[in-house]
Length: 448
Image 1 (cartoon, rainbow, N blue to C red):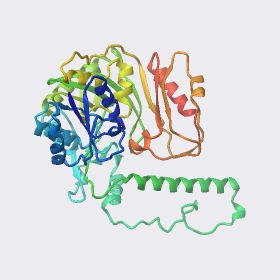
Image 2: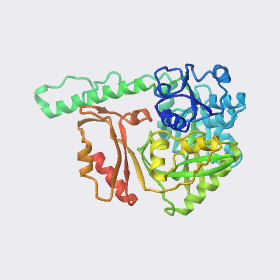
Image 3: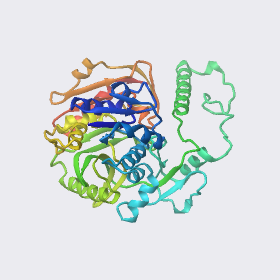
Image 4: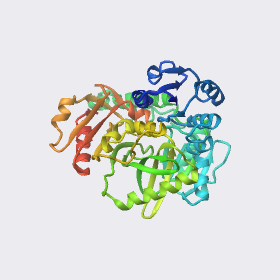
């Protein structure tokens, strides 16, 4: 078979290798000739994947059998467009738009009572009636952003300040203040009255402020030319769901609990898989809800992942994508926790070969990321030290730490500010001991 992969970053390599191991030819499309997936492909087409018509024309002579989705953002729409134009199985462009356009997604689901709460456009043109906004609420880009510029807002003042920061011309009244002076007045203090430790503390605070400003500028956070939405913060416990639509039937592969950073970013820093029997009611709710959701959107023949909230009997989807989850989930966490490699089994399914999506061998696995914030690193534990602090009932399945001494770990605002640090995978007998071990690992770093 000829399998196309559109968007060939490092997270595509796992699927490429699985396809090749099964004897298939992989054609990758990406504008970066040095992308990790490009280096592994059988054939490379160097194109900007946002240009749908060019990608379609380039793939037409390749006699593509299907497009394999790997973790991808808003350019999922290009995959849908290719499927439509070349009459391939998989998601349509219309479905892909609903996955990537959060405003359209909300309206489609609210119309069929699969989502509650409000959702307003916020783009500098559409004004928001502040009297109708209920708090807490979430402000985020309308189109896929990998967690960039997501703000959890508690009150009207926070919302007004954020809107003004992005689109307003409000005078910054703090410019005249000395950032190092604790009084903010800018007057020179007698150095003889300031202790060495206080000076050192002020110096470190100034360095941290500078590092944070550089990090924020580099990330392009809160761009005025972006479109945003403001939506009601959904109540309840957050879960992540990984599955596959086989034909038109949804199959749950894994359910993940989340540990989130505090507002405003609320990025997941720990995932723990839900074991069979841990919470049968939640499993049943998710299965029933996801089946209805897939039917309404019209998903066919695709891998997918979703973030959902459950409060009592009410289930709400936050976001969904007709692609597997990245962040070391589809290629590492799921195979370890279930014995099922979603990429391999989906390729087998699309090739008409024997396949299995139902979990084969359940294990309790924790996937953790290094969630320290606003600090310098003074000591980094090596893998031997980490193994020595593990309880006997916990096994370290993976250790990837890219943090170095004297690194500055800034605010966690999106995936890129977190994933570059590395991750670890733990296997254990129960949730409590895995959470405690994860905390112990984080505490083994000396930070100031």
